[in-house]
Image (cartoon, rainbow, N blue to C red; front, side, top):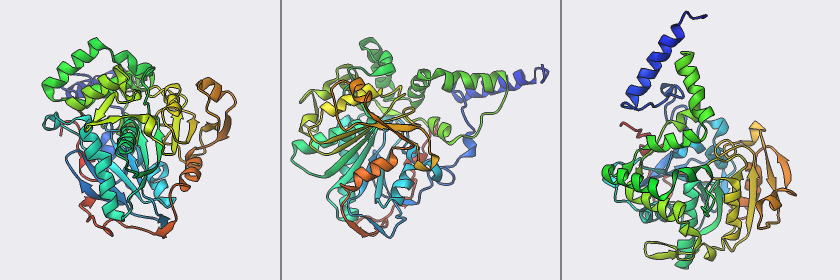
Length: 418
């Protein structure tokens, strides 16, 4: 009434724009995409691309301290979305914070694949991802072991890498940290609704025709799991009230979807989600090597989030029974993203710890100690034990790898439709 119906006219215009953007399918605008530019106001931590292949670029960040820990830190993000969720803006960048703590930080920036990479397998993501990164980091720093972080499916790949190295008798990882990572898919939570034999058959037929799974499809699935926050709130704001979406870095990242190569994604969904073969000794082979998580003895720090709808914390807790090394399990408040991207300076949320690890997750949680604020500082105390002595800082280009281009690199800038 106050606008005389002008809100509906503007809302219709927004709707038509979103339909045109989605080529006939509704792709809801969640934020002002032109308000952000990678390398200018998001993904701004200074660094260089020091290595690249068909599947990834490896970024090394400029140190901010005179001394750094001897052992480098490698971050393996998910390829279902882009790495800069860990480097949104300086105030909430985990990467910048880790650099400021004295880590020599490397991160994998996955390619946004098209049909030319349809043949890429999970094996390729292993060999051309973490394994290639380990070789490159040794060339850049002279260090043959690293501390590693894996986030979500990047954590699943990290666990496979650890088992792969264990089977080959190679000690290249000193410690591993997992952010909201499932390895046992018996109870996959809400995503399990979308993964059954019939749906996978249809999805595989679709992917085999195109050579990849379009990022918009994955984005729709994740948005449907939080429809009040990620669908209906924008329907009301954009189409009914006729308002422009706000500029929000997290929603800009959420809208920056990626594709998945058909062969790799088929294997991941079928062998892990549907058949849960990763927890079976030798249930999966990668590069001809049987994967057995039970052979992994590396110290592990596992972060789960209490309200996670993608990797339910009680499912991620199953990890404590899969590895043979010491494990510190930490439960953060909030969800899959906010529970991880929670800098200490924000003084938000809380987290729980318990040194005992009973089989039942509820039995772990009931006596767990609650701590205010972010778990990041707790992780730093833990990882320092595995990071080695202090050495002079290392800059990109100091070692055997010469910089290719400035961070954030060119791979991350490829958007759907480019």
